[in-house]
Length: 328
Image (tube, rainbow, N blue to C red; front, side, top):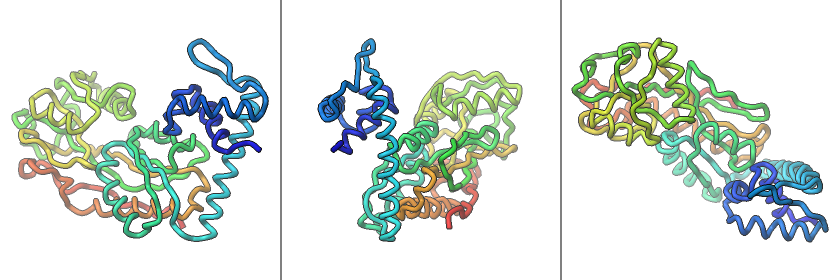
């Protein structure tokens, strides 16, 4: 009889295209992947992998079995969902991902709520950028991902995925306290045409959004510094190294010397959760979405999201739109 874990390893190899990718997706070592595949080849009596340059590729037999493995694993997941739904209990394991500011701004409250309400549920979390989160859900590496897009640049959600809107995040422009616009109540993006920008790293969805948005305003961006962490970006702003877009979600303390000013034409980050269609039959998925919606609603109220160290009036209440009910 074919071993399910070895089929899962083969499926990961087919999806990721490499031993290292499969190992990362399964959270095991590359040697463990190789051992599982050697055992699977002995079980079926055929070669499933062949060398290809420095890597490996699936043989015809390997691809045939990988196709069956994907269907078998899908049926196993469906069976698990149905069993959970039949029991009606929030138990077992759920894997969540979120982009960094959502992991910081939402996950602590969500994890506390799930631990209090569902102590038999084991929750694992990881940080993934929006596009990586969607791919991880499709591959089955995570069960639910918190992702984002912008009001003027949407992130396509592929077929086979369901989603629930959680909140809208209204970011500000962060600038040094001595900036010429630092005392303004509102600013227009066009007023920063001659400024240098601190941005997210190239290739990330938010970097592409910033390029698209500034160019749509007739501004050719002058990107001086790239940093993935918002705290790093704000530290560079405090040092007078430029300006940046500063989301309110997960912002936390703001360094001295940084001024936050709202944009007159509101920029909104739409934050939502995505999961595989049909997986919401699992009580654990429904519980996670409920906890995420609750955490999003609580961010409607003025809180420490406004940031410590902001000059008076630098930042108003965190303006989040309440989640809409999308699950029965």
